[in-house]
Image (cartoon, rainbow, N blue to C red; front, side, top):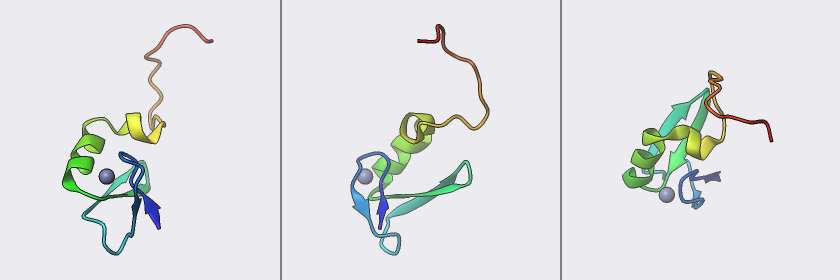
Length: 60
Ligand SMILES: [Zn+2]
């Protein structure tokens, strides 16, 4: 069972409405709405930055 990264709902990969590959990882979504939200801002949901861009300030 996979976890929809947007709404944190459990999604059966075989029944997922939408799936997407991001940074080499496959994500499954319960609905197109969640997929849209993910594609609009994937880093927000994955918590990872494929190509580190230091867009922040301070270190702590
Ligand atoms: Zn969802």
